[in-house]
Length: 78
Image 1 (tube, rainbow, N blue to C red):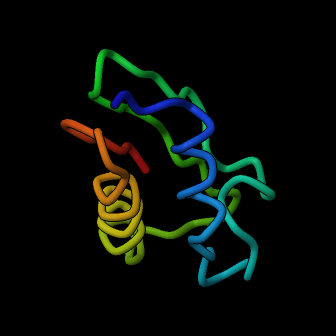
Image 2: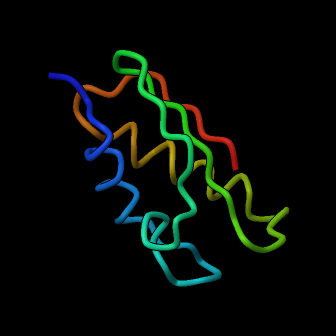
């Protein structure tokens, strides 16, 4: 079973940005989603200063995508 970009987008739709109360897909914060086999890399671009929240956001994004069946290594740059 392989992972698709729509699987990733669906997972990111369940995550709500704590500052905007919008998911990362609706707010167009998820950028450069790249699939290499089952490995996933993406950027989360926030429209506000969030130095103290970078690690919690990165962790939640990685956890949500890692929970998708068939996902491999996940890297997220916030």
